Image (cartoon, rainbow, N blue to C red):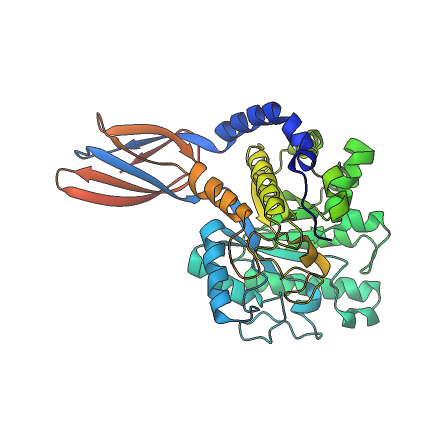
Length: 434
């Protein structure tokens, strides 16, 4: 169904709440994403050039298409587009594809290739090459369970799941800082879906505490138990209730993931009251922000729908910019993860088709690797508006400024020439002697 959407209808709530959002976002970004820094010089420095090279905040994307493109040219283009925008990559640990045969775990880079499921070592190599932080997804889920597990009863499944945790921890515990330990259990229990065993999510969190003591353990949830549930249940949405209960039980949860897939049929897009409601967005963010746990917008699909209609792609870009700004301004937000960088390579669909999730055209890049307006919008925010760069004269041996948290290249000019330093500025009030 190819149709051009009306921007005023799609963005009605955000247009109506623009002043309120702008105030919230401006104050939040200034307060939570920036700090005061002082550079002190023990020489005759006269000029300082400050250039932020990396963000502390994590802007991520799935790296599921590594080693799966039709040509090396596309593979290289993907890596370039990815590394230009993102500093975090999601590593796939889907059980059915990581261990398609019992005991045959596809960790190694020379493992048999499976579409959209590169071996973890391949993604780790990519992260090392480009200075990107990896994130593991996901260790406990009642979907993408290997068929061979069906022959086992509940107690054996618990034992095998623990073996899975142990193997992944031994190989990647010192390499991957964070993992989605449990995925989408609140929504799956809500619809009565359970293909592992009773309370598999609680067992999964306990295993996370046992085998990933030094890693960040994330409880990740999808639309049905958050945004869709909030429309009818308000603060009693399933994920909020589950989180309260798990914390009460003392289960090891370090951070929380809120998915945001706008999976709506095109004919419903202009009248969407679930996702594109600015008041709901702010209220939900405030509810989860109150836990004072680091948060992730952990999976994002913003559709432009099939057909390459320019108006729809401009609307996708405006939504992306508005939402990223709103999330970036939220106190405890730590990362934002776009789910599919390139159109035509999404889940539940053959490569390049318009079936399954490909129909939403939720990528930032077309199938031919040309950039969509949404890519350009995020590039402007991440690489320009939200980075600190300037040149200034130095007086009295020091220079103070306010900038975004992250890694910086500091170039100083003295009577004997220039020199460069790399510093990490990640705490308000930091002083650095150069």
